[in-house]
Image (cartoon, rainbow, N blue to C red; front, side):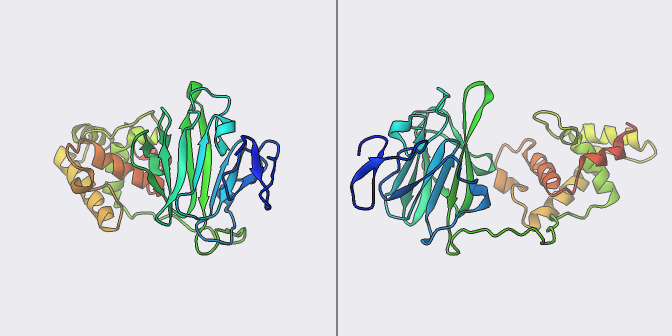
Length: 281
């Protein structure tokens, strides 16, 4: 196929739409003005892929072995990403359907940041794309990040209707005793202060801070450890992942407490305003 051209329904070639990258066979281009895929996407066939970057994108129906190439070199890829940034690979990655599922693989020098902060490097096995919305980020020059939005439709077609009047669903907030909350606020003080790359305090540091807050109480390393471990095991039994040694693996280090604090923050069980409990210290 000639770069920058696509076959029409009768197989004749005609120029691609201005601003749209070269579509793959059987694909349809999406203009740069196409709405964010975070709002959903509609298609007749389940397993239809939508891929969108700042300069446009494309949609492609399901089919074994079908591919969508993305990267900086517009004439040679189907979705152009970071075309003004030389740190983005000319062919940064590929979206491929295999076994009835879509997968993403990396062929660029820099990793692709996927859901949950997972980094996908060149040469690694492709990652499965779940139905629905998946943002993929490619790092670039001077701290830039280039977003590739991906949406895979499911049996419902992928449409997400507006729900403006629905009651907001509250997050799962975990019940803590007063002593547990105080200990966790001290343990996770650096996170609540939004320090860069925070780490939990040690048991000894936490006990010392709590002794400053409550000089009349007996706060020891063992008491702090007992309280925190009780909360961690309770959340683990309720389905929160990454809170056991078996899940994390050795060496554990601060991983268990780091995962616990982050789970409590994302659920709003702990919030920065809780720092008032230890402000006097």
